[in-house]
Image 1: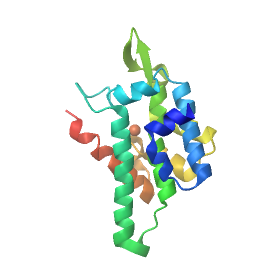
Image 2: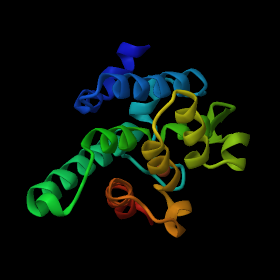
Image 3: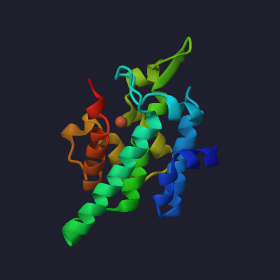
Image 4: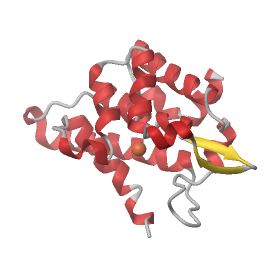
Length: 177
Ligand SMILES: [Fe+2]
């Protein structure tokens, strides 16, 4: 299982700190083991059930958001220098984990994908924090998961969290009807 997840998430290798990288991977292993989805499903299911005829897969959307987060952060570090502090390791771990809770948001009814009871009661920022806390991810990463979506609009996001939030939305909003 760990090797299969490393394959769909080559960006895990961008995390330099080994402990952080392995904990990030632990979350994905746990989530897929507790999901109705298989790893193969992640490469084929549409990234949103809310978009009609969506042809962009879950993993394509997720990897794009992680890659964009890293690109934005690198450019900001390059251009703003000491005026900004961005922790690349935490940023990448957070970007890989923002939607890990989505894996328990799905249910399969008569072969059709739908939203699970857990998903209806707790959106993935909440279930994602619960999963990441179980594996000892630091509060900076829990923050990024908790506040990446609309629930975080009232919060004061960290710089890493602001980057991830926007990278996630630019790879989502253009597809919305
Ligand atoms: Fe999300």
